[in-house]
Length: 254
Image (cartoon, rainbow, N blue to C red; front, side, top):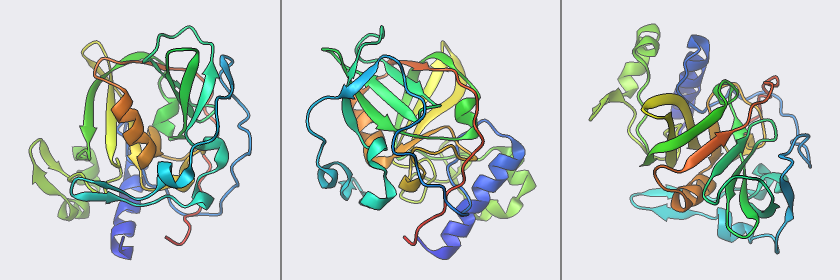
């Protein structure tokens, strides 16, 4: 990514945060980092120990070709072992196929048959703490387009120069630099959009952190894995929690 592109995407996040918008954007300004905890302070009570041997990091998080786009490999130093994709024992009441999000613990669980769940580490933005309850996956998008609200473009008209006319209006086409990443899941209650999203990120070092903007972000390789395991209509349970202070993380030299 060029320095110009990065400055532009940082500006997008700053604008969204300043406007208090409910949509998910996903970039945070680089400042001094706090190291992620080896064991998160909070965890769903129904969750037990990991099941089986840990997956091979290179196989799970290596470079992936996905149509006309390439998902870069994740550096081991950018993703704490505590937040890597892991199958765990699970004794919750939710039916298999249910997605359970625990924002305070920075985990997302996909409940499986046989008393297990696939656990993924997530980063949680301010919007990720703003809503809790039950929803369903109403839409799933590969390499989703992002449409900045009109209020954002009015406040920062220079951003319009970086947009193009897409099928649903003025926006940023899906791709490797799009802040929504490789996949997005859109959550609804009935016909009402909750504005809650599960989406990818190009900043794996933010996983396991509370950040200043966005909803529920996952490493692109993980959100692609979740996408392949879920279907339209899947139930999603978002646990309630108090919102911690955001931890802004430093961007490594990538």
